[in-house]
Amino acid sequence: MNRRRQIYEGKAKILYEGPEPGTLIQYFKDDATAFNAQKKGTINGKGVINNRISEHVFTLLGHIGIPHHFIKRLNMREQLVRQVEIVPIEVVVRNVAAGSLSKRLGIEEGEQLPRTILEYYYKDDALGDPLITDEHIACFGWASQEEMHDISDMAIRINDFMSGMFAGIGIRLVDFKLEFGRVWENDFSRIILADEISPDGCRLWDIATNEKLDKDRFRRDMGGEVEAYQEVARRMGLLPEGVDSAVLDLETHRKKRGK
Ligand code: UDP
Image 1 (tube, rainbow, N blue to C red):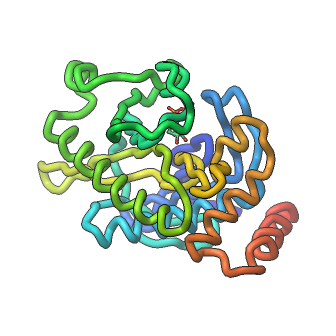
Image 2: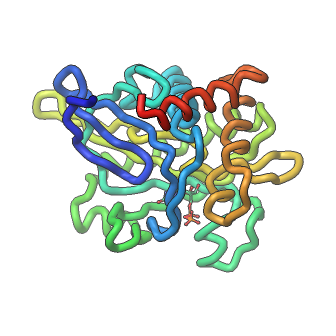
Image 3: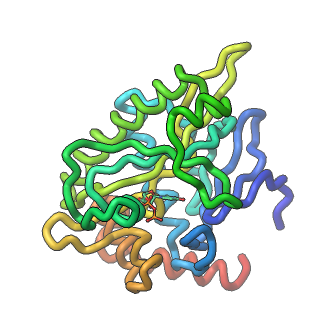
C-alpha cells in the first residue's frame, strides 16, 4: 500500500513526494543497469547498501562544508532529501584511467593520471549522455559560469576528501560521478550536491590487489557484485561483521513476500 505520489522513477532510484514542501523521499532499488540501460539486472541488497553508504558519505561531506540535499535516512531503502532543480550535467572526476577515458584515448586502465581530470556529460538518456565542455554548458545555458565555478570547486574538494577516506580503508578511488542541483531562496539560487554517492557511480579498487569493488563487476559480468558492495560497506564500518548478509537476506525475504 503506497499512497505517496511518485515524482520520478530512474534506473536505480524512485523519487516520491516528501512530507514537507521542498522535500522528496529517495528510494533505492536493487535494479542495476549499464551501457545506457542496454544491460539490466538486479544486485540483491544493493539498494539497502547504497542508502547507507550514501548517507554516510553525504554526512561526512557536510562536516567539511559541502552543501548537499541529504536530510536523514528514513529506513533501509529510503532517505529524506531536499528537492532540487537538477543541473542536467553529470560531473565525472578521474584520478586513474579507466572505463570510457581509457577507451576514448587509448590509455591503459589503472594508469595513475598526472592530475585529476574533471569531465562533464550532458544528462540525456536518448543521446547516451554525451561528453560536453564548458562551452556547450555556457552556450545552451545548462548552468551559469558562477554555478560551474561552484560545481568544479566542490567536485575537487569532494575528490580530495573521498580519496583520503577510501585510502584509509584500503580502497583506491579511481573515478566517480556527481550530480548537483539548484535550490531557490527568494530570488536567489545556490548549488548543492544531490543524487547519491555509492559503488554504483564510483570505481573503487582494492589498493593491494586491484580487485574491483563496484558496478564494473556487473557491467563486465564478473560476478560477486553483492559481495563487493558489502565489502565496501563493511570497510566503511556500516555493516558489523557477521550481520551483513543476514540483515540483507531478511530484507530480501520480506520484499519477496510483498511486505
Ligand atoms: N558513471 C555513472 N553514471 C553514468 C556514467 C558514468 O555513475 O551514467 C560513473 C562510473 O561508475 C564511473 C565514472 O562515472 O565511476 C566514469 O565512468 P566512464 O565515463 O568511464 O563510463 P563507463 O565506462 O562507466 O561507461
